[in-house]
Length: 180
Image (tube, rainbow, N blue to C red; front, side):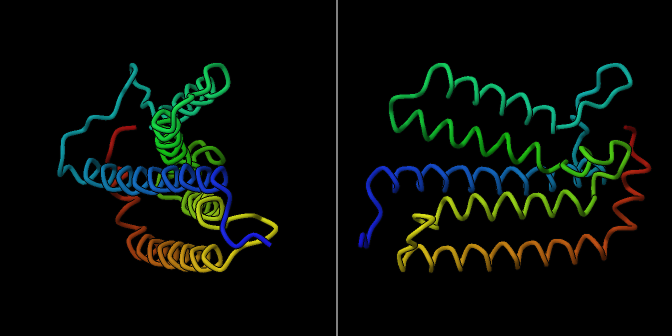
């Protein structure tokens, strides 16, 4: 029985940790920036094409397509380039899943619960890849990291959802007063 993961498995886990970190930071930064823009605390730098607001999920989709094409057609050979791909992939996931609710409800509010649920699910999957070790034989360190990751994500999801529920009327008012 293997107590520690192979070097290849550890490398994949490291890439997953970079992806998870970039994903969570992008999601948090997106939420903060949108809130600051809508509350008019910072200038509006949303992209408009005519009267159409180009949502940041589109930037995420294009980034995911670019990273996917890069990895498929010109696979990076160095660890440094693989780490960059993992970070860009995490940023693309964060931008895209931040507005996941809008995939399902095109006219819906930015502050939909569906987006939070999707972000928590993606983060848990990335956490499993990052800290879980082998799917068949988790070693002690993997179980510990997995437990900590799931607890932290559950706490973050609960606290975020509780805050959003409490602030929901104010957030929706902000959004209604903002041009789309």
